[in-house]
Image (cartoon, rainbow, N blue to C red; front, side):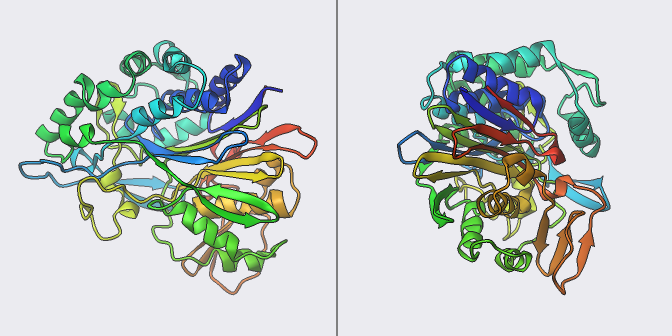
Length: 450
C-alpha cells in the first residue's frame, strides 16, 4: 500500500490518491486534493479561502502551516460599505450570513498550497493538474454539493456557478485559468501580481477594506502544534491564535480513559455560541506508506458572493463567530480566530491516526468523539466516524439517533445523522500496519486506499 486518503468529495479523494499512486508523499496528495476541492466543493472552499495544514513527516517533529484569513484594512481609504445580510433556511433553523465587499478578508489558499508543496516531492504544476482538468471539463454535481448549493443559492448565483442540481455538469473556466497560473507561477500573482491587483482594486472600489497592501503583506506562518497525551499517544493539533485545537486539548485533558457519555458531556462543557452555523468547511486526511501524515482543513466561510479572476472570495469579515467583539473589531493584519483543528496522533511507531472535521464550532467535539471511538473504544476508522454524535452548546444538548442522553439538560433530538455534527474525515494505520479510513457520510466523505 502506498497510502490512504479521506476527503469531503470522491473526486477530491481520487485526486490525492493519484499522487500517491505516482509515488508522491502524503503532502503531495493533500495539496492535490485541496486544490481539487476548490473545484468540486466550490461553496465550501476555493482559491479565495483559507485554512490550516498539519504536516507530520515520518520521524520528524510535526509542523502546522497557518494560511488562515487575515483582517484587511492596510491603507484603506473611503467609506466602508455595510455588510450585506442574507437569510439562509436550513433544517429547522434560519441563519443570517453577511456578505459583500466588506466581508472579504485576505485569503490564504494560494500561499498555503505553494508553502505546503515544499514539503512534498512533486512540482506545483503537477499538483494542480487534476483540479485544472475538472474545472475545464466539468464534473457532475453530487447530492451533498447540490444540497449546499440549494442552501446558499443566492451566493452560488452571484459567485458565477452555473450548475445547481444533482447530476448537472459544472464547468469553471476562470477557475481553471487561475489554477494554471498557480501551478506555473506560484502564489505571487495572487498577492503581488496582476490577479491580486485586480482583486484588491475591485474590492476597494466597491467599498471593501481589502487593499493591495493587505495581499502583499500576507504570509504563511509555520507554528508549533499543540500537544496533549491520551491513551499513551501523542496528539498534535492546531495551536493559537486558532481556538479549535486549544478547545480540543482542554477536552482531552478533562477526559479519563474509557470515558462515559457523562464524561464526554463534562469535557465538552465549554462556552459556545451561534449553534446553528452551517460550517462551510471541508477536511482532508492523508497517511502514506512511509509514515508521513498530513491533515488539512479549509473554509470559505459562506463565501462573499464575489468572484474575481476565478476566485470566489471568502466572507470571513462577515462571520459573527470570527468577530466576537463585533464586526470590524480586528486590526489590519490580525489572523481571524477559527475552530478548525487538523490533528495527527502519533505513537511509538509513528503516525497512527490523521483526522479533522468540518462544522464550525462543532469541530472540536466531532474530532474528540472520533478520537475516543478509536483510541478508547477500539473502533475501526469508518465505524468511529459513523457512530452517532452529540454536541453541547451552552446548556443545550444536541444528539443524533442512537444516543440516549444521560443528562438533565434540554435536548434537541435529530431524526437522522446530520451535517450539523460535522464532517470528520479519518485515516489510520493499525497495529499490523494496515491502512484504512473513514469518510463521513454526513457530508459525502470518501476514502481511497492505494
